[in-house]
Length: 257
Figure 1: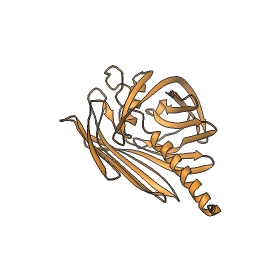
Figure 2: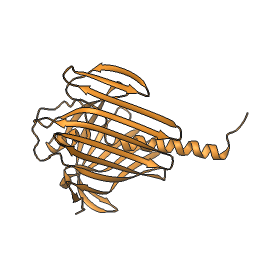
Figure 3: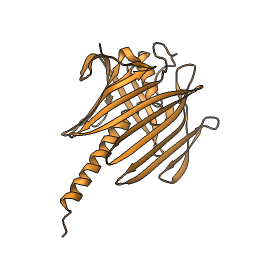
Figure 4: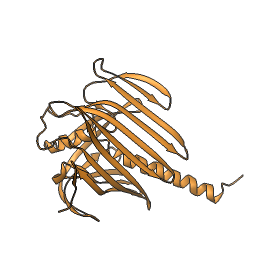
């Protein structure tokens, strides 16, 4: 039996770590979908442009990630990027905001360019016909949709709107790879979060899961329109962490207390 060379084994291990990091980075921006909450107008939160930079750490391997929100007329565009020497993953989502403060996704794309291979996904929402056309690695399809169905990106904003409006426990539906998935989150409470950049007033939420071995917590900046400050995932003996390194909200630097 031929044994893999040490160099190949190290490369495969690094690629696996990068893949896990990418999942952490991107999933940290996926929090919204079909929410079981009452219709509420936007109160304390208004969708404003931002530019956020994060440092992600998993098993000692670090990756830089960015998350941007741009306003284009009546529409918005969210862009995320995560990269290191092993590859790059980019996502982009376009959406609108209804008068009641609900996110209305329009288009989503994802491109992965890594040593282990390339991958892609796209989604186009047609609300007039309540249908979604999608493509995953070249294979296409269609599915029916309802108000409150979203892609992986534009929905970050919905969670920020919901928790800013006082929601404590929310169930969401997202569309990923042509399938519908549900996520449930619960507000834990307020906390002073200490980081290398300083301390922030934060609101902590936790993802509720049937898997007791896996826990996910997210810290939002109360004083900065609930921008994501930190995300931590515990799974078996591993811990993955994403922390805000620097950022701007509506052109203003996000500063600690």
